[in-house]
Length: 166
Image 1 (cartoon, rainbow, N blue to C red):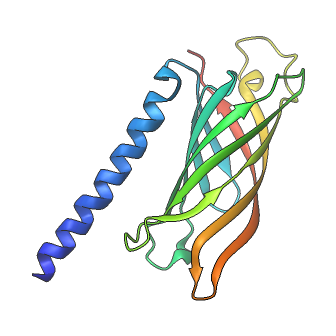
Image 2: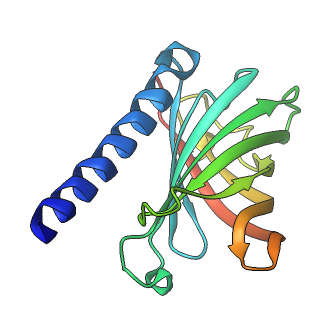
Image 3: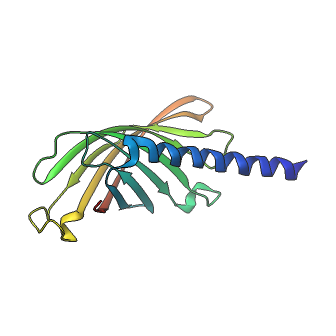
């Protein structure tokens, strides 16, 4: 009976990850520009369409301090403001998922993203032209934080983003 319960939990986890990846792939019809971001605190992000009005990003938090060593996944959608010469501001909404399926949704996030493009004047096909720096301020709402009720938190991430040409 215990073995069957463990297999069901693993299948459930795989299904949630599959649904998140499909949603990320279908966002904006998935014909946009793909980017990879390496953030501080052992976080890696895979994003789509950062140059369009709406974009999305899937983040994986690989920090071992979560107890089980599996990490946390976060799916964010962004509204991108008009791109300026050396920066772009984006605001978003996202869900932070735990690997523990007792409480699947860990937090609701509202990231505020500033992308800086210091190498914008380089050639169009240059490696440096596709590189940018990212600063995120992330207010987080934990609906099931403890026995006493809800909890708000704020975190931040700093990273380097590389956009692949299509």
